[in-house]
Length: 177
Ligand SMILES: CCCCCCCCCCCCCCCC(=O)SCCNC(=O)CCNC(=O)[C@H](O)C(C)(C)COP(=O)(O)OP(=O)(O)OC[C@H]1O[C@@H](n2cnc3c(N)ncnc32)[C@H](O)[C@@H]1OP(=O)(O)O
Image (cartoon, rainbow, N blue to C red; front, side):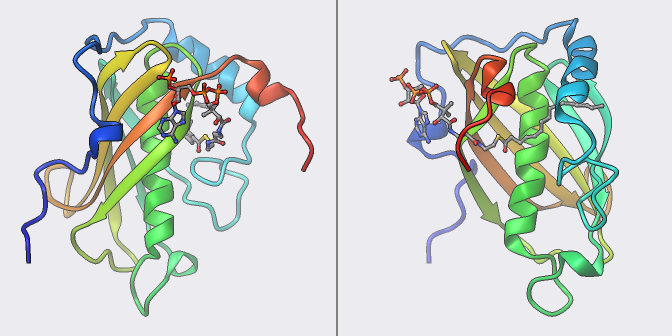
């Protein structure tokens, strides 16, 4: 059996040689407030009004690196006593999206790749971190991880993603359900 790769990224989520270093936008926090007015409080990842949502709390940022945490509750269970893998991918998506928005533009997930390295028991406090590795036109290349036992504890889940910049209308225009 081969060992896990040192990065979760496939060629699709690896920045090409033409990518530039990410630059955090100082106005992004203000943009988040405007984004919050659009997104509301119903986000499954971070919305406070979703009864069994993840209730992810953003705890800080450093450049384009975003930090957050959430607690796995019984409603998040998959296999007995353990967090559902899809739910952990959702947590990765949320923290990746937060890092992408620190770039000061509007991004959505185009591709999400997730590695599960250790089981996450119900009751765990999961420490999330995400950072941007590069930007190439509308594409942003990001990675994320979720740790147990503290912000520098064991990595239980990690992800790589390609985010695509979109116009405001992506969120405001109503398509056909
Ligand atoms: C107090 C309140 C605080 C608020 C604080 C806010 C903070 C904010 C936190 C947000 C936290 C939530 C984070 C959740 C984030 C989601 O979960 S977003 C929801 C899930 N994602 C979606 O719904 C996206 C659905 N897909 C689409 O809408 C469209 O496919 C896209 C992604 C916009 C792209 O469509 P398009 O604009 O027509 O562009 P297109 O030409 O197809 O693609 C552009 C380029 O990207 C490439 N590409 C696109 N998709 C892919 C792919 N899957 N694989 C490879 N390449 C791809 C294309 O090949 C193309 O490449 P080039 O030809 O330019 O080289």
